Length: 215
Ligand code: PCA
Image 1 (cartoon, rainbow, N blue to C red):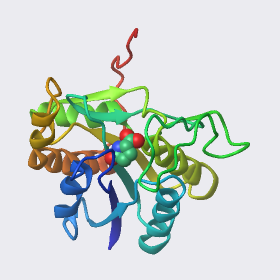
Image 2: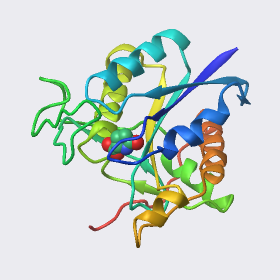
Image 3: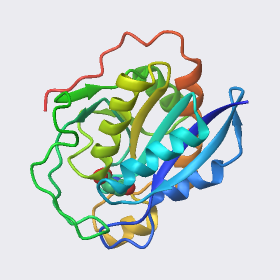
């Protein structure tokens, strides 16, 4: 059976949990569109997370990889369109490293655009009543590093692999400790990830609808 690899991250930035892993973990072993799901928890540490992702891809040989990370402050499930070749850490990672203005990959392209049919995937979530948006920046921390490393792996080594990055809001208990920040129930995120994986695998043609923004 073909596989789907879903990844989440360990907690970082003083949080006790990371909803990306909490939402991904229950999907281990489930079947979607004829594929079985494998999961991996990545360290929130520059370099280590990238190595851990590439090991998981080598182990599971997936047809689809969706990497998921927490983006506290966002209100919707965010489908990342762009990964940039830039690390600029506002806070230290979980090993105490805080690189500033370094490339993810020396000599690599400035950016990668995802090849996933994100507009069709967003439509699927919205139709199911799950808040979802397209995003033009995955930031410049570990999540962007992983989004870039995944896109680079696909572009240079695995042209048939589909993959992309998804940011999710705080879980409600985290949002309660950050006044004004939105939260999303982890079960809803899990349901959204199922639909994203299914639509990423089964969409034949991307939707021709506007998805850009002015800001
Ligand atoms: N979010 C961080 C890294 C790990 C995570 O879940 C980010 O957005 O870069």
